[in-house]
Length: 124
Length: 108
Image 1 (cartoon, each protein chain N blue to C red):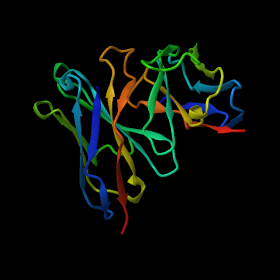
Image 2 (image 1 turned 90 degrees about the vertical axis):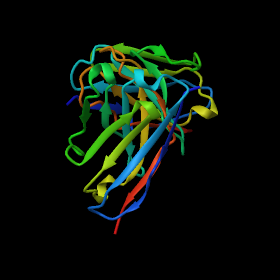
Image 3 (image 1 turned 120 degrees about the horizontal axis):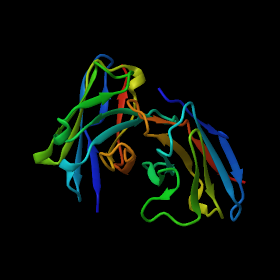
């Protein structure tokens, strides 16, 4: 069974930093691209960023709203995904989900498994 | 960026009846469209991919259709557990991956 478990959320002041983790199990983590998606309280889903797998050189993509402040990384030896968040703003307050991208082909980039999320609150 | 627009924002339907949710893309996404269900307090769950293919374990009462810019999710006979928020998402052209703003399905 695919499992994704996020951790690392909490309360942080504006301008601060936080690192989220996502522990994966039940599948070959190294094969998959992985995403972070967030959801502000009472709002819809917003894609945050993606990291490709080793054959695709671990390249990353980001939403414009977080580019230059957030960094997605992974450690395939630990089956773990990370989101380093710097220069946090109040508008970054959200539940952060990690999600598995089904495939690497151009028509298979839907998110077939999601974690339960970790809550990040940015407030003074 | 491809903008996804869902309608209506809220849909009130009685149990046992049919619900039809719409999603429109600002440019063609061919059939690279997924639907997700999010129940209160839970993570999103994949329902449909490639516009019309049900994900593993999804009941047959859920069906998707459409291509290009117009898509529909139909729930044929609503059960109590189906009252939730539904999101469409395009994955044809990225970054960024984009979601619709969601349709909330309420019990009438």
